[in-house]
Each structure stands twice: as structure tokens, then as C-alpha cells.
Image (cartoon, rainbow, N blue to C red):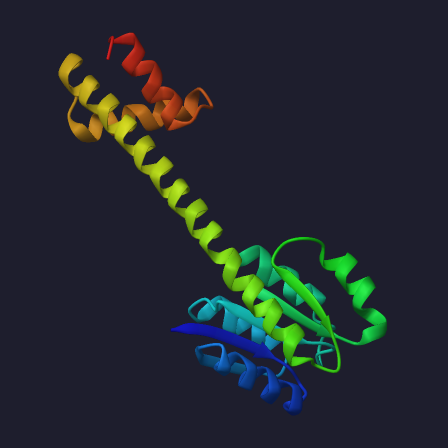
Amino acid sequence: MNRALIVSSCADIAEAAENYLRAEGYGKIAVISSGSEARRFITSKPEADIVVINTPLPDEFGSELSMMISESTAAGIILICGNDLVGDVNESVGDGNIFVIQKPLNRAAFIRCVQKIENSKPNEHRKESADILSRIDEMRLINRAKCTLMQNLKFTEPQAHKYIEKQAMNNRQTRKEVALKILASYGN
């Protein structure tokens, strides 16, 4: 089930955004009224798929909050601001997964942003999968190096692990680089 967070001090906009999100299949929606409360929520609760921020908030404008969420989560962000501020806010938040739309809240524009966010998710999952596969390959390589040390130098597994860690630290190398050197030196 898709999850969303709405940060808005205006009940009307929060309600409209909630209705639009429910129509798009978002079942778990939290509504918060301030930036500080949103920061606490983001750090303590399961990650939202979409965060909607209606600016200005009572304790901050909201663009800083959107950038913090963008840097620390994979959530797509919709930032709603006054028509006269759209250009400036768009420049200040930069690229990424932050979409800036103007008030009054337009259903079609809002839904387009939601769909863009949803369409960008598979690419992020592919990137996460590639990162995980890369880490698995690195772990396999390190384990092969440990086995090589255990066979050739009669190390125990903890000794081999400690040796690789210590070499990486002393030589300012990654464990992967140390493992490659060990495998190369023993012809594996």
C-alpha cells in the first residue's frame, strides 16, 4: 500500500491533497501541520512514498524541509507554493525528486506530479538492486580472500577477517582492494 505524508497548516489544501492521493491509491496518509513535526515524523516512521508540503509552514517556509527529505529518503516531493514564488522556489530546490506546483491547488497538475513520481520509482529500485548486487559481489570477493588466507597461511576465519580489515585500514584501501591483492598474490 502506498504511503504519503502531507505537511500543511491549511486544512483545506491538506484535505484536497489527501482526497487526490486516495484517488490515486494511497491508503496510508499522515497529515502534519508544521516543519518540525514533519522532521520528527520522517526520522521515526516508515518512509513515505510521496511527501506533499504546502508552503509556507508555521515554523519555516518548507523548501529546506523538502531538500532535507529529498536527501535523506527516496520519497518524491510535491511542494505547493504561491504563484509568484514558483520560479524562485524551483531554483532554490534544484533538480531531483521535488516538484513545485502553484496555488490554488489544481487537481490535474497535482495528479501529473504524482504520476511522474510513481514512474520514476522503478529506476530507483533498479539502482538499489545494482547497489545490493555490487555489495554482494564485494562480500564474495572478500570471502574468497579469507578462504585463500585460511588455506595458505592457516588462519582461522576471524583471523583472516581481522587481517583484511587491518590491511585496509593501515594501507588506506578498501577491503575489496585488499582482497584483490591477496587473491592476486596467491594466484586465485
